[in-house]
Image 1 (cartoon, rainbow over the protein chains, first blue to last red):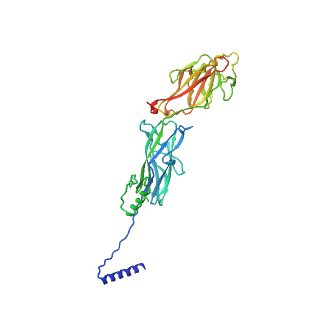
Image 2 (tube, helix red, strand yellow):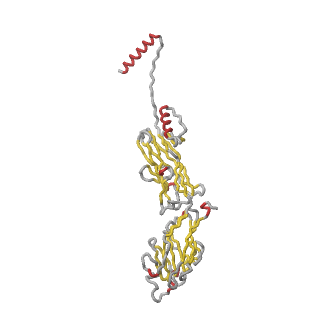
Length: 174
Length: 245
């Protein structure tokens, strides 16, 4: 039905063109939309800070846990976008914290994280899976990653820092 | 890492060959104008900086403010423990300050179930004075209390000073020791009126959060009455740890 209408329209256009003496050429283009497989993450800040004050440090007993003071509430909102089928994962890699002046270290496994209300995991320098999703995220999926520091009482004072990595990985479709 | 993209600031743009995708990315950037994002074909990653600010701290907590050796209360569960020793003090070694450490009247201590103190090799008295025929001079009484010494600095020193009260009867011989959980009871440090002894020295990594202080007095058949002494506990660290010059 549609082809018949299209043919009639072409004939009409050709007749009109001949009547006014105008040349006419016809062509067909296919329109293809290629949306590549992508995975993306975004965070509002890249700084995670633990600051201990005299009010709560030292604690009455060790080990003691202290939530991060930055981001607010110790929770980093990580948004993930995936438009592909298959499994995607959010990973965290956090090496030991080091005080540049004294060389003292706080081992990575004294930093703990969890996604939402999930179980706490101890960090390590090797990337660890914090969360796994399946299929497209249908827009941005927000994951709330909470951080806490566990002190055992033997940590020397200092200003410790470390470069950590948050990443998202998509497993190729088979 | 094939297909991975390093994180970039939100203000920077990315060229993509597909107009539709480029439009989608542009919208994503505008939504996180204050943040950071990363995009890739199979991996995306963003570096984070984690910091811990831990200031230098010293803290000293005493479980009691008065320690009474009441010889009328021998045998009370939470009271004083007196044992009958014999002879002079026995030198067992040196304290952390190089001074003598001793076994008062040859009496030795151990800790059974933390923090319960037990005397070794000497009969425990259930009443004072000891039975007839026993020498009064060998009576040694012990008490303990919990002390919390916390330091996160490179080196610290926990010391005790003794100052006797001018009134009352003369204070008997006094001894001290500091025991961390899991340690054997060391020799006791005799401390005289006006003297300072180092109870412990350590570093932040020592991990002696629970310390039991053992205080002993040797009665030596002293006069009846109340004897008082002040013991001042001091936790010291080097000024450099507190950025003081």
